[in-house]
Length: 67
Image (cartoon, rainbow, N blue to C red):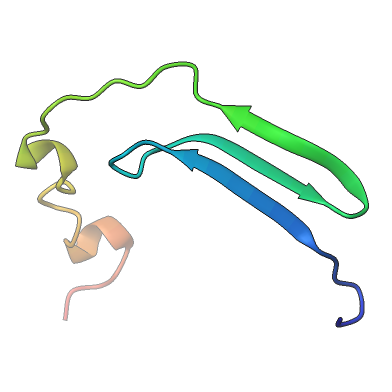
């Protein structure tokens, strides 16, 4: 084992479509932390809902001078 490293135990419970609903993380020298989903909502998404804003690549939005 490398210096200053330790064994971390990571576990998760997934739904059939691979959505994580429970995560557990712990190590040899620390307490185990667990997170559990309280609620999951599913719905169909429109393409517009997941695309970035149309002007995200505009140079002026990133303080990059025009060429």
